[in-house]
Length: 462
Image 1 (tube, one colour):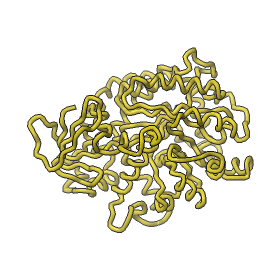
Image 2 (tube, rainbow, N blue to C red):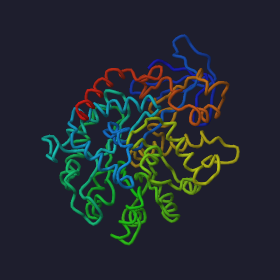
Image 3 (spheres, rainbow, N blue to C red):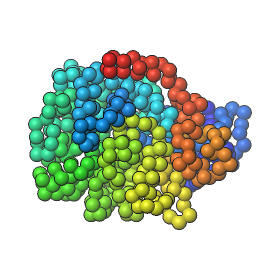
Image 4 (tube, rainbow, N blue to C red):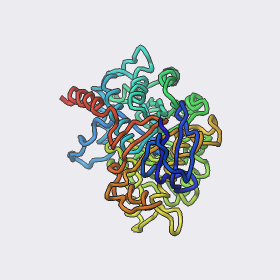
């Protein structure tokens, strides 16, 4: 990329003026200069902030957005939504997986989300027939990331059962189901699929405690090879009740007892956590992956974030079902859900006089970076994403200072106005690993990707 110059930019030490950022050929930040005047060769922008990591996505579910908002004959819930999702999955082919993921990733970038953790559990062909290449659909996800330029942490997902205690899977889950051995082949194929993508990594994801037995969980964890491990957990009250009926313990309680949970783990949702589970998770170093828009859409509940943050627990944000793609709105819904639950304002601000927007963003940046790249492999030094510092990926978002929401805003007022008063509408340009992928709020390949997406949906929903 050309040298970028910002009137003001958010650096790890705070806001700075006259910031020039230079990246090397590998897309890593090589030099940051403060207090500079723009040079003739600089590309000039008003406001620069780090790109936001997205810790949890099911890309294909974007095709369902808006199609499940019709009341059924009985009370609707996550479980009734899931049946509609299964029906959609039954018709997807590899080209459709790639087309949907590509538009989703473009929309993520337009919303300020620059690196995604793709929780990938769709592995087989229709009817559950394995592909000749076990990495067929993983390679489609990788192709979508390459086409759009988004950073990728691919999380092949192990799914073997329909309920706790090793219950047999249902026919509609056949495209997800694997044995430990077949899953190991998928993990290896996934590593091959991302090999050519700059900064891409592969972790693993046991889908949930209801989808794996204790023996299977113990067998697949080593497949992570010290990379990250993500798991859905305690998302719904029925899941908690079923886990107690099976084991006598709650899901998070069971996991903390059964596994050496540490900073490699991301506990996705963790919605229904007791005080003891909140303390245990914070102490373990695990990241909690919160997906506020999806959790609200599915009626999951509200994670006890204030208690977790007070204990120095770390969280990242995810777009999950991708019903709406906007990094700022995920943070806004996170804070607003806490305000509704506690009947208070500025609940997640980190202290008296502190900006709520700044607190939310900093937590999502640091927690998100940790959830997508293992500290064991990369060391405790510079995070690969989620920061503007030397050695980090040049994942940068410029905000449009001419937008009314940012009029006469300075410092943290910019973040508060972005998160609470505008959202993706103020995202101007986005660079990922030094490559400019969004210009004037639009992904550079949006028209092409949208045409392919529309063609795919026409065939799926006809």
